[in-house]
Length: 337
Image (cartoon, rainbow, N blue to C red; front, top):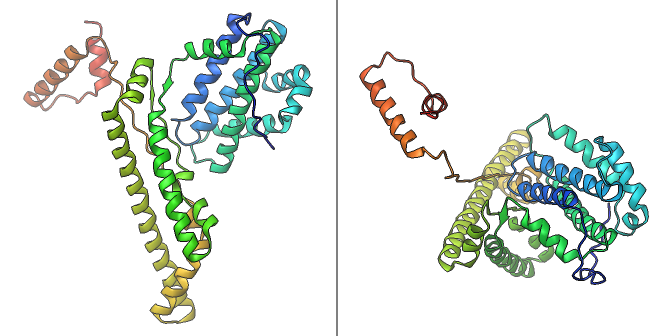
C-alpha cells in the first residue's frame, strides 16, 4: 500500500450548501468514534476499532450511493465500494488488497488477546485515517455539499472528544530527544539511526473525555498543562530506566553465553556483548501499554451505595462466618432501593 498525502484545501465548489442525509452523517460519526477509541484501545483492541471504523465508512459510502445499506457482508461492501468509486479510489491509492489484508487481521484480533505487530497497526491507522478523509470528500461531492459543513456535523455527533494539549506537550519531549540524538549522531557518525531510535517515535497517547467542555478546559488551562508535562516527563523517565535495565540484563546474558561457549575472559565477553547489543532484536523490540481512566459518572445514588457498602463491611466484621460478597452483589441488592 502506497499512500501519498495530497496537499489540498477542502472543496469550495459547494460552499454553504448541504444536502447529506442524516443517516449517512450518522455512519460517518460512528466511524469517527471508532477512530478516536482506537487511540486508547489496548493490545489488539486497536485493530478491532480501526476495522470497525473501516466497516462503517464502507457502509456510509453504500448508503450515500444506494440510499440504504444493501448488504452487511464485508466482502460485498468492499466490492460495492470499488463499484462506485473505482477511479477516484485508484487516484487516492486505495486498493482492494488493503481492505482484505486488514479484514484478515481483524478476524484474527476478534478471538485472541495479543500485541499485534506495531508496524502493521501503524499502517492500519494510516489507511483508516486516509479512508475517513476520502469518504468525507466523496460523500460531500456526491451530494453537492460543503465538505467543511459535513465535517462539522460529524464532529457534533461525536460522543468522545480528544484534547490537543497532551499531544503538544509530548511533541516537545519528542523534539528534545531528536536534538539529543542528532548531537550524539554528529559525534559518533550515525545521526539518522539515532534519530530513528527515539522512543517517542513509537509512543501513542491521547487524552479523551465524553464532554467537549472538559476537553477544552484541559487544552486551555496553563496549570493543567504543567501537570501534563510532569506526567509525560515521568513516563519518559520510566521508559528510559526500563531501556537501561533491559540493556544491562541483555549484556550480561550475552556475555555469560560467550564465556560459557568460548571460555573467554569476563572483560572480553562484556566488550563483545556491548558491540552485539545494538543489533539484538530483544534490545529494540518491546512494547509497553499504560492505560489510565477515571469514570465518576457512577450511579445517581453512589453516595448511598458507598455507605451501604461500609455497613456491609461492618456487618461482616461482627459476623465473620458470613459469606463475603463483592461490590456487584452489593450494588444489585441496593440499586433498587
